[in-house]
Image (tube, rainbow, N blue to C red; front, side):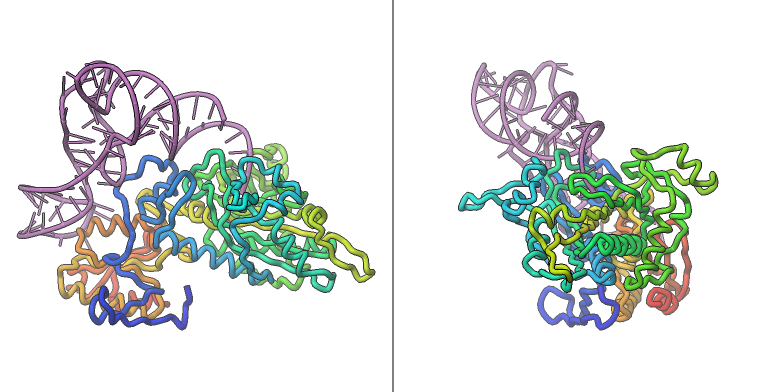
Amino acid sequence: MRKAGFPVIFATGAGWPAGDVQLHEFSMRLSQYFMPTLKETPKEAEIVSHRLMLRAGMVRQASAGIYSWLPLGYRVLRKIEQIVREEQDAAGYQEVLMPTIQSADLWKQSGRYDDYGKEMLRIKDRHEREMLYGPTNEELITEIFRNGAKSYRDLPKGLYHIQWKFRDEVRPRFGVMRGREFLMKDAYSFDLDFEAGRRAYQKQFVAYLRTFARLGLKAIPMEADTGPIGGNLSHEFIVLAETGESEVFCDRNFLEHDVLGTAIDYGDSASVENVVNYFTSLYARTDEKHDQAAFEKAVPAQRRYTGRGIEVGHIFFFGTKYSEPLGALVTTPDDDAVPVQMGSYGIGVSRLVGGIIEACHDDHGIVWPEAVAPYKVGLVNLRAADADCTAACDKLYGQLAQAGVEVLYDDRDESAGAKFAAMDLIGLPWQLVVGPRGLENGVVELKRRGGDTERAELSPEAALARLAG
RNA sequence: CGGGGCGUAGCUCAGCCUGGUAGAGUGCCUGCUUUGGGAGCAGGAUGUCGGAGGUUCGAAUCCUCUCGCCCCGACCA
């Protein structure tokens, strides 16, 4: 969502109210939006994020663990994706796009065609060739690299893509948090030797800290098992949420450190390493690895934090695990041929939508962090049948859109209660409430969605200034 | 893949035990009245009762098979 240079489209065709300005990038009338909200919770949804996503009209289940994204949900997904993209770019990674469907050949070379078992969705094409819907992309990216880079002069390199993947989970659950089809960012680093590879790993470590902080989350890096991907340098990033699947023990210093407040120079490996060293020196473990005695020894009582969390990212350094069997060799300055050193770095983009809701909601609905909210402001017209009230709303709507403030305008002829409930449910950070009662006194009401119950009556001009500022 | 549960209106669910030809709330449509926290009254539309077979004069209901979905466990971004 761009902040400047936004497109302005004047509607002239049928279907739009005559003379109305349509600013698709920034604004939407609820009367025209496809946002099928539900008053009651569909029975298949157990956990809060799944319930809220269905009720808010963000997604619909297509089949077990597979979802369609409706406009509201897709907007959030794209915002998360964009933040992830910006931080990958900032860390010096280049975006590519690999296919969802892959040939089995490379997977046989790496030996994972058998290892992956039934989780891998196997397909045959019309020529009876063995294909698969990619559960991940190490093999393919290694082949791409192998064909395009031959020398140490081509290193280091970092590539990433954001693509749908499929893992045929035995038991998909928790809505988009544990779907079979999911959107994932995966990045891959290519370096000449272990030391350079370790630096690449550390860059991603910092990029992850920044990414999750920008998403409005507290994410804690924890030493992790390497799982079927293999290797020995690995961290999981766990987002704190009361409803998280695993119990987490950590030093409170994690929660208080502001990574975004620190300027990062990715070109300065010493400063990157400092950040990594700080975070890896603090105690942080999931219940599986938790050692109460070690916890008490490492962390003073007042700094001990116990909570729950959801895994949203995982980074690995795995050296030559794929470059060796797949023959991704580079020539060294001494004219030797050595397998390239690799790491891979995943973020579950679609999972994050659910993860953020798990971390950010209350009894009334979602409470979006501003960075990923589908719209910044919900403009509520309390009396759509009242000409003056509607005129005031229409004016504010146009002004907000022109100012580049993303606004969803509830212009429906519904009861006030229904509108408030819908706004709370979809969780936009600001509610701008306009009713005849306030207008008599020249004021509108501006409410902050969420904990701090910030709420003020002020003139429309002041509200506009506050939101556009 | 082991254990459990559920499929009846868009959504939540009743009816099933004890067979007689389908209901409620909510949502949707129309009209009127309302309007600051999911409004009121009146009228209206909506179902291959998940599917297939069987038993029966007759099946949402009983029997068999099957498909789908959910929960717990093992597994995982």
